[in-house]
Image (cartoon, rainbow, N blue to C red; front, side, top):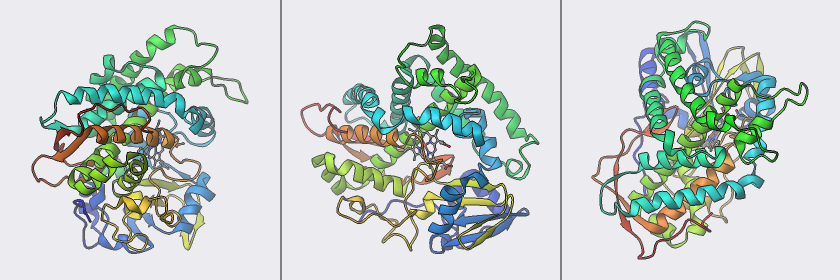
Length: 444
Ligand code: HEM
């Protein structure tokens, strides 16, 4: 069975300085080998208790049973706020409740048929351009980032991203390279004290939000229609059930920024990892191409197990609590890592191997909380249906049309910085799989 390349895993827990260094370069290399075998790990770092929880009861308590006692960590807020503002991802308390109630219905399963039309059309157009490049080395990470951005823009906001896409991708790249890696001070100082990195991030935030405002300007210039056409119209029409107030222009802008960011990079890397796995496992690739209706979801589920785009869920305890066997104190940091759970030796057989049959319809479901690429509880990913519908359409259309292989034999190593990225952009070679061009229609 094919085993993809793994990041460096330390034998022992890292000391303070190596840990900070590793957090900046690759969070996946901060967890020692033991954590993939034990039910939990507890450490004190710079005076703060850190837990890594792998036990169902403790995870249930933090994410499902008592989520009100846990908020996003100061470092997550520092890093993500410049790009998502006060949108759903970082909102807390009553503000979060209202935002969630507004956004969730627009991304619910019953809305999928409306959204998948855009997904299919955009995918067909993008794959058509690849036919002209058969045999040439291609950067498929960049391809997927552009495609998922186009799909997010068109389906959620009826935007033609072509006008803004280049600038948006450039800003997102700048963010990933210069602003997404936490410095020592970012991790140690309370959020009220700005670090040098924060000052740079604020400058970045101004440019990013100006771009989102420019994108929204055309839509805001016309009055909202009676019947909402897309997520943007729904957000504009939303009213607080108690006060009757709508979102302000700034809140609307932050929501659009949040959904564009959260809604495309995660799906892009998931599709990238699926293609990387398939390029290295020809047997699985051929199986998928001959039965995409059954196997696409299995391959995606297994890709999200081995390379969960959101590799870590972090919370800070607001007050004391009892989570499973642990007495949680105020300000303790709780880490629940899909990356670790999905490769835990007590939860999976042969955890590092790529085996989509784990998710075949006749295999029993994995144990409770051992598989959670979209999180769980009230803050579960609001875009999970959207992401799965999109990834299924794109991946099945791709393998029906193309046979793919990787150029050269440099291993593609995962790096955890906000999302699970590759350490370089590998090049792929495509060959047409059949003489006929296949449409993405009917592949969801
Ligand atoms: C494969 C793709 C995706 C993965 C793996 C993923 C993963 C996750 C995870 C694990 C969380 C929970 C984080 C936590 O509890 O701290 C989350 C939250 C969220 N996701 Fe996704 N996501 C994906 C795609 C999407 C898409 C397509 C959208 C939008 C259309 C989206 C929007 C959001 C938002 C707004 C939140 C915050 C929800 C809240 O706090 O109420 N995600 N995502």
